[in-house]
Image 1 (cartoon, rainbow, N blue to C red):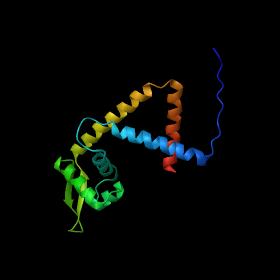
Image 2: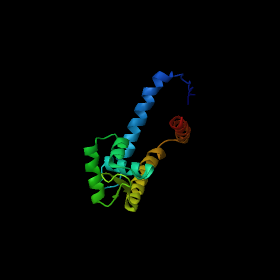
Image 3: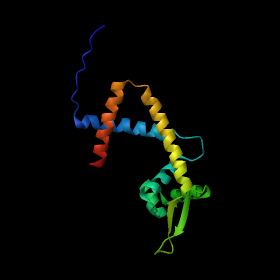
Length: 149
């Protein structure tokens, strides 16, 4: 058995940034694709998640948060409302507007989606060795620090 020497590479931030961004983007995309069997799209789940995190908002605000055009958001809201996952209430000061909020049913659906994603990721993490999982635990802490900065 030969001894393996691991040499720490010094990677400049400008070189690390695109590698890290690409890895995060690909992992995020794959995690988002791991979902329970159903007919909600990734976009619909994202809109519900935004309503849960930010609270009630107008359709225009939701479109801005989700970075889609208002007509696209109108379609998304319609499908979510048909399923009883979003409710509209009159705007308190502008009669032309409505306020959107996620329903309790939406919370249950989002919980189910989160469980499916966590299970997918946990299954992949279980295939790694202890050292790799510890490296990822540390990386998660660092990524959280970056996100808060």
